[in-house]
Image (cartoon, rainbow, N blue to C red):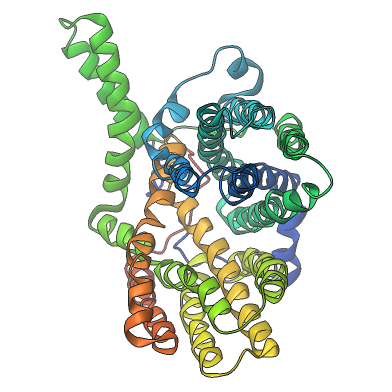
Length: 468
C-alpha cells in the first residue's frame, strides 16, 4: 500500500496544475456545493456586526455608558481563541445530531441554534436594566459564531477538491459580505421603523438561511491516509502502554494527544523544514492590507470626505468590488494555479496602497476615491480567495477543523499587532508616507511566495485524504 506525498492534504496545490480553458474555469461555479457555500457564508457573517457595531448603536440609543459599550468589544476575543476548542469540533461526535447529519453538519447546526437563541435572548433583554444578561447573550452569539466558523471551514475544505477551493472561498466571501451589509446597514435601516427587539428578532430568523443550507447539503466523505492511520495507531499504543493509569485519566490523555498533539505533529511532519516558512508566510500575507485598513476611515474623514460618501463608496461599492475580486480569484486559481494567483494578489494588495498615497496628496476628489477603492477592494478580494484556497490545501482532512483554525487565527495576528502602531506612524510621518510604509510591508509576503514556489515539489496530486 502506498500513499501520495501530500499525506492526506487536499492535494498538492503547489504543483503546476494542468491549465484549464476559460469555460472550464468558470464552470466551477455551477457545482451545487458552491451554491450552498454562499448560504453558509451568509450564516457565518450575519452574527459578526450584531455583537459589535450594530450592538453598540443599540446600547448608545439605550443610554448605556461609553465605558460599558467599550467593554463589550471583549466579546470579540472568542473569534481569536477559537483554535482552543477546535479539536473538540474535530473529534467529538454530538449525540443524536451526529447520527442524522454527520460530523461537520451537526456542529454547524448546533452553532446556528446557539446563534439564533442568543439573538432572541438579546432581542428580549433591556440593555439599560439587564446589561449583564445582554452581555451573556452576546457571548453566546459570539461563541456560537466562532464555533460555526470552525465547522464551516472544515466542511468547505472537505466538500470540494483543491481546484474548487478558490471558488468555494469566493462564494463564501460573497455570502459573508452580504451578511455584513444585512447585519450592519440593513439592521440600522430596520431600526428606523421597528424597535431593536424587532431588529434582533428578524436577524434571528435570518439564521434560517444557513440552517436550510445545512439541511439541503450532504456531509462530505473523507478517508484517512496511511500516515494518519500510523499516527492514530501511536495513540492506541500509548493507551496500551499506560493501561496501569486510571481509565478516565488514560482516556483523557489519549484524546488530548489525538485531538491536539497529532494535528500539529502532522503539519510539521508533512512540511518538514518548510513548515516554519509556511507559517511565517501565513502570518505575513495580509499584513499590508490589515495595517492600511486600521487608518482607512480616519483618513477618509480627516481628508474631507462626507460620511455619506464614505458609506456609499467604501461601504456598499467597496463590498461589491471585493465580491468581484473574489469571483475573479475563483476563476484564476483553477486556470493558473494557486501559487501564481497568490503572488499576483500579494503584489496588487501592496501596490494599490500607493493609490491611497496619491489620494492623500490630492484634495477630497470623489472620482479618485472611487478609483482607489475599486483597485484596492478588487485586489483584496482576489488575494483573499486565493489565500483561503491555499490554506485549505494545507490541511489534512483528519484534522481539518483544528489545523484551519490555527491558520485562520495566525493569518490576522501579526497584522493586528503591527496595525496597532498605525496611528503612531501617521502622526510621525503623515498619511502619504504611511501608505508607502504599508505598501512596503507587503514585500516579505511577495518574497515568501516566490521562495515557496521554487521550493515546493512538483508532482501529480492525489484525491483528498485518499489511500492508494
